[in-house]
Image 1: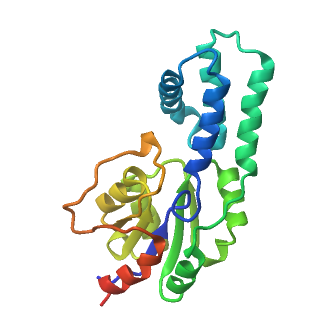
Image 2: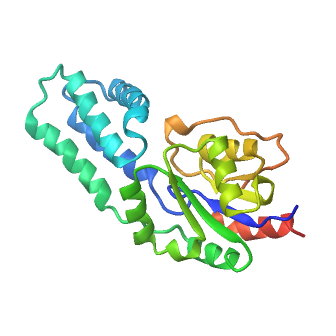
Length: 232
């Protein structure tokens, strides 16, 4: 059946995100370098983030709290208050970073919105995701915006049933195999993977290369051509 709905991830699909986290992580590792080897610190932080996902979810706030918790643990509770403040300042700086769309993102959305329902499906902190969407200037291209706590097979079925004609007539475009592509394919949709330059370790997954509804592209600008190929 022909496509009627095309959904997009936000962070690292429409605008840059993970690089900002990596820069803040480097700032954090430098701050804590007197207390711990940088590689060991990275492992501690990643494990703390993994544990805290069920408490704080995804996004800058959870990441900042995980940095604070890791710093307290690494130093045995002796980290000075001014260094905790430095971590909090780093978190605030992440919030202040503008969400600038990737090259071609606006043109792609404008083109596709003429013939398809366009949906944004992103996970993370509601306040932060709304802020970035407003800053990006892309909001008017979407027929629906879904900010969810997690992206699962059930999530995609619900959204594509509610805002489209079901998963079989829907496509999900994103940079995460774990969150954007595989669960969407499992729900019955077409999954399009556009790898980002920097990948978060907790989003790593195997490519479903043998699946007939899996496609890998190098940039957003290739989406219209793929859509045309699938609908002609």
